[in-house]
Structures are given as structure tokens and as C-alpha cells.
Image 1: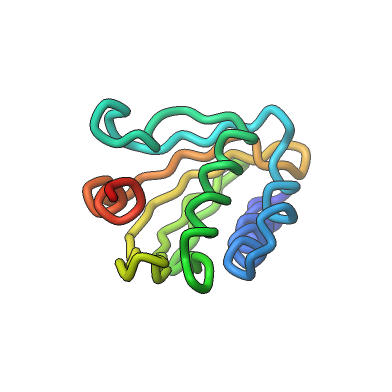
Image 2: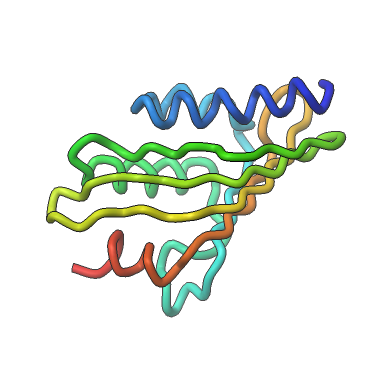
Length: 134
């Protein structure tokens, strides 16, 4: 696939995810895909390398705890070869009244039309406060 096709694939993942179609978004990842989330697991339990199934469970749990789901909005894309870098923002109103609004940098690696690897950089202190702490 071309860099432009890879960029379109990543844009489609966020479109499906933000519309609440998590299964459709996850179908765009290979079965052996990994999703790494920045941070220290001892301080931020969502951090570390996750399998596709583990990430889907985390994402599903987070979006179910939000009144209208989680919207991730890409603000910039850079694509070269099999890599797509994305800057993005998110927004979601938690059922407990907290607001989750984060900034991200994602790096996607795509081969044979499927996402193979994702590296997610975010404000872990904010994510821990809103998504993890009671």
C-alpha cells in the first residue's frame, strides 16, 4: 500500500472508533497487532504493550464508562512508507462527571493492508486521573 493509502486506513480507524464502532475499528488491525501505551505500568496500569484483544478490552471499557463514547480527532498526519504518525485530541464525558480530554501522538505501522503495531503517547497523569482513579 502507498503512504497515502496507509494514511486513509488510519483515518478510517479513528472514524469508526469515534462513531462507537469499536469492532469495525479493531478489524483493521492484524490478529497479531500490538498496541503500546506510554507510561510506567506501576503508576499507570493502562501502560505497556497490549495484544489486540487486550487493547480492545481497554478501549471498550473506557468508552462504556462515557456518556456518549470517546471521540478521537486526528489533527495532523504524516506518512512515509509503512508508517503513519498522527497527532490527535480526544473528548469524552465520563459517567462519573469527569471529562476526559487528552492530546496524543500515535505511530502506526501498516503492512499488507492491516495495522501491525501502534505506539500511543499521551498525558498519562490526566488519563490516570480520569480513566483509572475512582
